[in-house]
Image 1 (tube, one colour):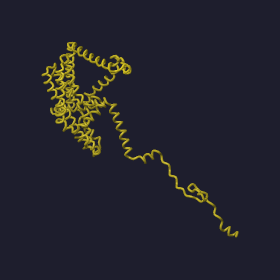
Image 2 (cartoon, helix red, strand yellow):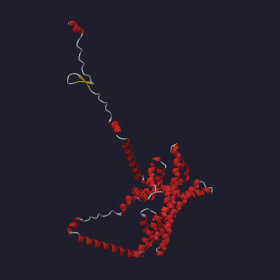
Image 3 (cartoon, helix red, strand yellow):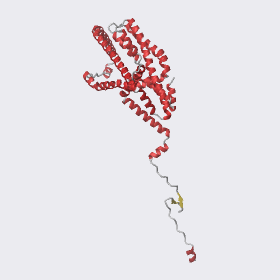
Image 4 (cartoon, one colour):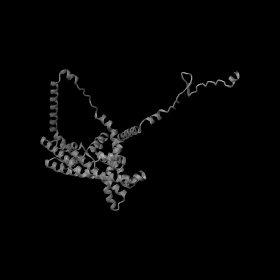
Length: 392
């Protein structure tokens, strides 16, 4: 018996290890291994869908681009205006090159003619403004009578309000008028903005000159920025954008000449002073989207302030409004509609967007910018649906 005990010893009980846990009966029970803990960044990348990440990146990129466009408003407007002027002067440079004039000399001559034309127009406008200011004292009595009539109407409205509102309501609706600052404070606050604007405007002739003289180099170098398989499409896009901008400028010039000619004739028939000058200004101001009809009304109404009657004022409003409607609804679609190929909804949204960002200059540049974006979208496969939406 002892020998049997020595030959068959009782096996030692094994202690449970890290992967073994004793159950209720004392025996081992297997427990699944605990998975390794991952970092929070890896878990976010694993559980977040890819389209959420791409959407977030698009939103951040859009916000960054909008901020850059708004902050760099002055710089971008100067560059875009220079591009438009270079397209205006490009046909003149081509004509001079045909007469064996070097491109640099032709560009310099074209820019000089542009600056001279702007100077002559400014001098003519200044002289006409001085003549009008000299005649303003003649209209002093009429202006005072108009002011007195406006004050009388304002007093009547005030008396009507006092009779309608109780005394308690009048005390509650009392308005405190704060004295406005002096004109010296206003000038001092705006001096820096005016100086920045003038400094930026001085760069426009130089930018136009270099854009004209280095046109071929700039275009070929821009195409070389793209990959080999995309260079042909980039070259075609640049050509179409250039043609679109040139058509936009030429079309607006033709419409402006039409409006100016009819305005001069009608203002002369009405008997307005300086009708030839007022008609030209009113015709080209009418081309500005939305604000054009209001701006076109100001020169003839102010110039005839001394002899203005209700009938003449209504006739001027009817002439300007009728020419504006004909230009926007008949001439504009026929001359520019086929070249731009933009639907009215896209143009209206573009005017709203760029006008919000850049003000009056945004209204002027909104259409060519949107037309260029449509051409780009039409030649990029992923952006073609957006180009289709912008089109007619």
